[in-house]
Image 1 (cartoon, helix red, strand yellow):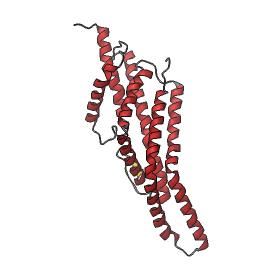
Image 2 (cartoon, helix red, strand yellow):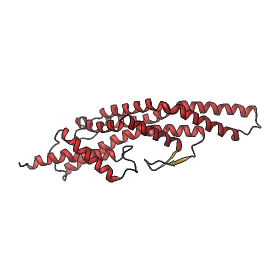
Image 3 (cartoon, one colour):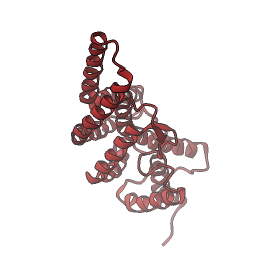
Image 4 (cartoon, rainbow, N blue to C red):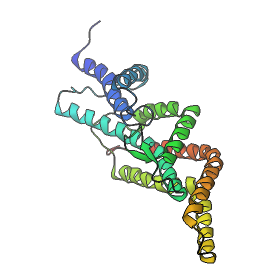
Length: 259
């Protein structure tokens, strides 16, 4: 059995281009792209997914990856993979934003620790929300949804030299803005209760100026914040489901130029 050179290039591209797209996505996507996961583990997992996914895909054009045309093909896969990873990052950053808002209201904005995902400082409340969101994401088979999303992307974002349209980039930017509104929506019950408590302390201060409000206020706001956290945690599940649904829906609306 012999292969012609174009057939060899098609067979090579059938595995190489999905490997690049999946690898780019897994390099930044939550859970898989955190610093705690070794690069070797991500490469092995990417290779395993490529071997499983590639036979179900259509043959790509016969393009030598060592030519300028092949470089454009590789660049397209990298950008698509990073776009998909960024979309799922926004899901978890909404909970980080919610944690920051609640932490400021309950006086724990100064209590921060290193986020293992990004390596930056984040309030401890944001870390709590991130851990809960990660566990719920895995419990809901979100990692399988992520893999299915990248498999489906080869249908509406096929391998080629075309890149995302202007409308697709605008859609991604608008979805990034949704992160802030989603974070406020998640934290709204807690920050509303904490705001009412702070207003009440303001009234008490006006009525009794001799009262040391700083000695009394911080323990009360801290305790109230912890109570609101216990009440807000069960509400994270529907918010996470809505965010994941919106993410997958947004990704299916992305299109390439000339498509």
